[in-house]
Image 1 (cartoon, helix red, strand yellow):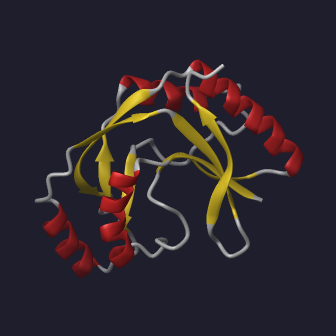
Image 2 (cartoon, helix red, strand yellow):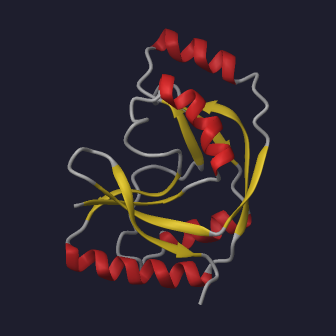
Length: 171
């Protein structure tokens, strides 16, 4: 089964992201707006129990932190994906490092960590240019406290749902 680890922002930020995602994101119907901490990985039922225990331990050691979302940016020329940029704070870096420590079962990542919340993807070059032009003038400036991380799994229809939630700093 496919799994991933993510942060879901508050409803206010999800509503803002979804106002663009419903028009410009081909994955809109499959998962709410989120910040990916661990991209998709495969695990068996037995492995996921161990991974969930590890995530619980990591969450207990990491403190809640403030997430700052600043502006719309793009991954172009690599892809025509547009996202809300999330500043890499000390708390987010600490959590990312813990999730990528060699002792964590799923420590490999194929891309550098660029904290973001996707708002548009799979756009044509022209559409990407138009949408990014509009969104780059947007003042996103959003700040919120992150207190939880979520282990997600993918359903047969491609949608993602929460397998387990872990509170940061909770014993």
